[in-house]
Image (tube, rainbow, N blue to C red; front, side, top):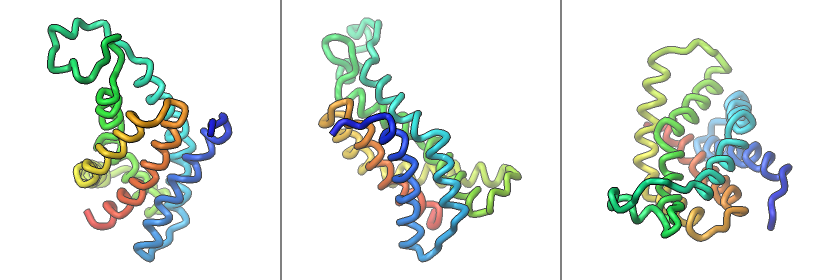
Length: 179
């Protein structure tokens, strides 16, 4: 299945909010503003940043002498391109605690009906929840990103990542409630 431009744009706009909606359903708390906030995040960021980063990971080639940095050798192929382990590690670096904190912060904006008064408490809380959620989901993220980066061809990685991060959208929404 080859994703055309339209599907590449519409999948995150649909799947991320659906993931959050599933979490809201599990918790028995529906919030329309929160759904709109997650959809806006998907429109503004998720639809373009994820495929762009995966293309970067797939094309990245280092000029470093890997003999000097022997500890990095497993992350690269003989051609100095990122190996599956390098792409998996790169995906983990991309979906980091700050990325999760941004998602959590947008959930809180929706919960507060788009009250854009930014408080230091909201930022610290989002960073704390984002870090805890990242750590809690790290084992699944390692396995999921390995599958996306090592087993899927580039043209399917975006779809795989959208599905994986939609599952994480459920976890992040639950984290927002419980962490």
